[in-house]
Length: 475
Image (tube, rainbow, N blue to C red):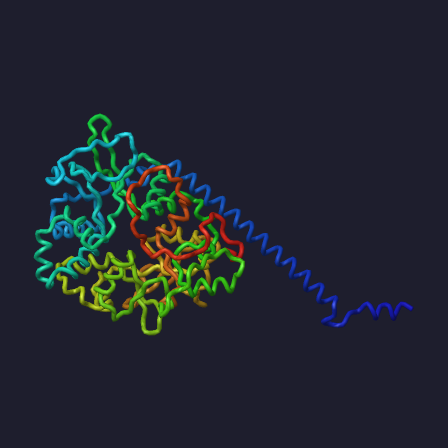
């Protein structure tokens, strides 16, 4: 009687017994995967809170190196002289100083010396008067494009045009003035970061003021790069930022990429925003150009869209380079303004021989990898490309993001960083995006005055600005 019972106990392949075992195995695997994601989320949030605590306990003065050079330009300098000084000093921005009382406004208004931060004076008194940046040069080019009859007249005008007239040119172009702010060097990095995030500024001057005499001194300029580099070099908790930039919504991504991400992870917290307009580029809302686009056309993009970099695509739609607003200063350093009619291909050929490769990553790379990249090289933005089989998503341990080899480059000088020739564009990551996430929502503790200026890339709908990484997409 035992034999029939034993025979009936043996289930044929594919029977309900095997299916139940497979279901149990899949359920266990799903639970383990979910547990792993939750653990990574806890590690990520712990690292983020530790970094924010680190910023509250360090001052802006701590970021400054032991020895550094500071360039301050008098507002009586001509534009041509100022550009020469900036180029020789290898800087793309500098504080400006009014050395005499303005003739049009002799009034003098006292500022509260106990205030750590205020809108820069507009009353004509001698002292700190703001910053000159690449955006000012871009607006200047736009101004002469609309007003000058030829390049020679524009060049002659720059020989006499003074820095103090730059704000008049912005008013002519109906460009909102940048928020002219400063902060005390002993204020915390968290407070300085909040000002940078709230005003969409990329730099903020550090001014010290004598309490008795009220005399102020420009100590230095705190930039987004300096702040984030300081975090990368001195805060080891950055290695715990395991969530991917895609799941965190850090950066500006194409609408098509967000649609694909929603399809792959329908429960991820994505704010898609309005659909692109008719006849929009497949890379909307990113602005792109080709190698045959003129430099003038790209300068118009910089000025009208409030951006500072444009990805360059080839005929196949692959990214081959990145043209930045600082390239315009390099092109104009000789005063040959006719070079603005060059194509991007010709302008790239005029770059210095030691110009570095373009950093790139994928949306699956972790935020820790971005900080690892900041340790190795100076970068201000990172191209986000489609994953490549040869370059799979970087491991959970902090690894520098790969570098996009320039279209005219034959070898990579940065051997520790992997390179790829080109790829499909899906987004652009700027330092302002990283800083905005690290700082979080500003507390509004300081009065910043003017309307914020435009950010480095157009703002698009990304995942919700929450500290927690999405569980839908494992880091």
